[in-house]
Image 1 (cartoon, helix red, strand yellow):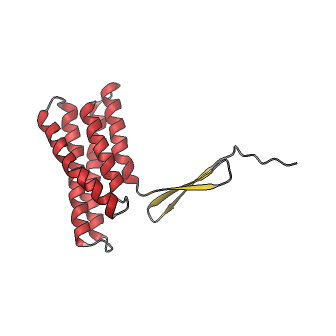
Image 2 (cartoon, rainbow, N blue to C red):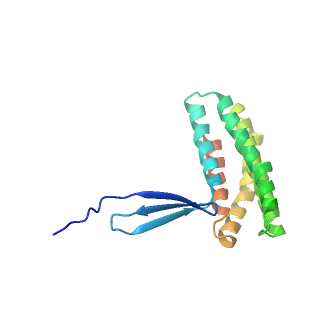
Image 3 (spheres, rainbow, N blue to C red):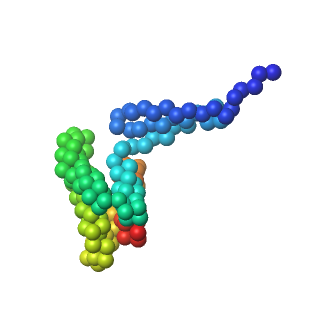
Length: 166
């Protein structure tokens, strides 16, 4: 009687049309696929972790500032230019993506100011105002786009609340 080894699992990473596909072979022999839409969803998570470690482990503030500036520059000019060149999107979607990119870049820039001036109430009120805008955007993208930008809006909401609470 032959017995199959059911404890083996593996992960195959492939990139299809800017979607990341993780394929797992489960212990039952079933292949499970996880589609992760864009790499930019990792950016607020990475910035939140970097912000936490910079504050708690006394890293240099310039280290966080450098990464935040790079990610902020990605969201405002680079993402807006690529969204503008996308022929499949309508004008309304381009405008909404441009506004979201501006909000994300504003959040990242405000997090740099909050890093150097932690008791600044104006920045905390700015975070609240952007959160009031991002939550309906999250609901809109959840219903309309089936999660295209909703994950990014949700991650920036968590990033915003994490930054103000640390």
